[in-house]
Length: 530
Image (cartoon, rainbow, N blue to C red; front, side):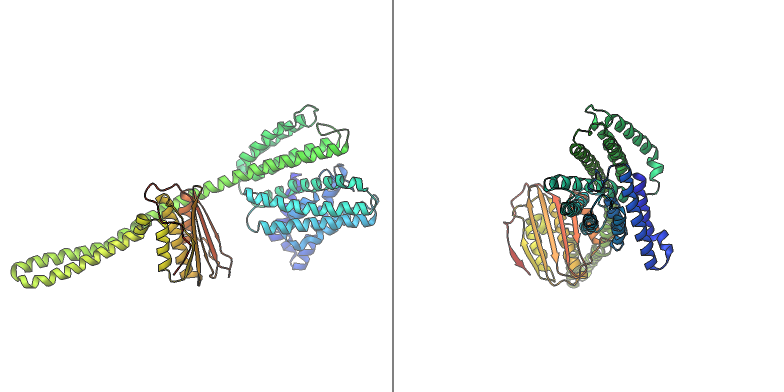
């Protein structure tokens, strides 16, 4: 089974840039890829028939569905005729009426298309195995697609008098769980092994081989015995998810599933009951539980690792940004306030010398010195305002955001402000999120209106800025948006940006916040600010 899914991944890679690319003309490339999918689909179905875990009516696990979804998800929906051809070739026309067989094929093709389209829509970017949310969306897509096949296939069998009405519910359940199990085994395997990972075998090859031997040994003990030893395999699956990531987890699941299916079809082990229905159901539930548990744990580990890597990178960027900010402040002090204070010193010295010789002319120099002093004070005030806005410190986030809205060149609609103050770190971070978002909307987005909302509830400060501009904003290296993400994530918050081309930009930041120990801030307001 691992070799099967790896073959799927290799074929997908070939479609994009490898062997099929050598065919030349796009139509010939499509033809070769479609034929390859049909051959692979039928071949996997024949393996299931030969090993007796798939039959003309229903299957303990139907692996071709995973092959089809993986192929179309990675390669493209245009290759769907390969699923149709493969399924037509895989049908046993001696065991089923022609109408029922054709109905099954229609259901199987719709199953793959529905699951693939949903998966592409729910997880348009990235790997669904890398996050719990992505994994959950993949499960939704698989569940929806397999429901279609189970429903169409069961009804086709009923209409062809292959089964009776009394059998319909049992056949539908077996069909749905069998297809879902096949997708859960093959699709994650193809996704995990379909993307390049240089050096993975060098780093984890020895541990992977040892772990697969352990899983094989535990499965051989647990799944050939009538004793309650079935879940001895789970610690090894957990270890695979924790230590070896998606690649190791999917290999481990496939191996454990292979043992379970093999022993059940041989009528041995803890899932071999007198009732074939119970045997099939117990095996399918074992496959589903083991796969879901292992993949979920692997997704959690991947999320935590990605967050740790992101936090490490953001901290490094923050250190660099802090160093640049210190140099900027030093430069501003040197070129601005320091120069003015030096000039002020010179003028006062000149006024002092003139006062001794001609007291009347000293008045002019003192007036000029007063002007220099006033300008230096203004520059220092502006510099301090850029470091930490006085309005934020003195009157809180609500007042500071109203000030930002009032000074904006673009009309700003403030739909909500916090009714209470929170800690200074959260308020300052939220202030800079809104400030940068307003500046970007003015400079780059050509927005005509902006909406700002902020609220503090349940120990979190939530800020949202939405504009109607051009969209297309991205977190390029060194950009202001990347700096905002770094600020928010550095204090344990979450930062999101949605900016489709031509549909405006929505920036959302949520950060931990504790109540401020000082004087309560301004009451909650709903207002239009200009």
